[in-house]
Image (cartoon, rainbow, N blue to C red; front, side, top):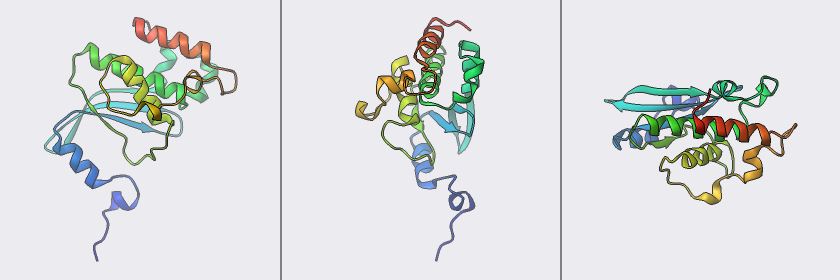
Length: 166
């Protein structure tokens, strides 16, 4: 009987998926969520060594007009969308190769944070292959169902990101 590797046992790495991603020789856009924030990284691999070229966190949204009092919602669906929009804009500005998405071991349920992130990438102009039926509704992306209705804030931050304001 074969024993599982430590990172597979602790549900951190799917080695078959990682091997497929490495064999593609394409850069990856890595989406991760923590207890407080959402992070996105543009990663290139060379001989199974990952090199992070660009990295942003949802904490950066505070610089783009996200209110300090709503800091607890930096891991929400609107924040995921805006992080996708921001990293997509960075990728296009620096004329980097089109990446493939690496979500790791996060469960992929329809209309969740991952698909909001992919929707943001797609809206920024990065070519992402994904069925649009899986994207969250516009009301959820704007944060209308959250306490305090973040729709005005999300629109303002989106304009700041698209205009390049900090």
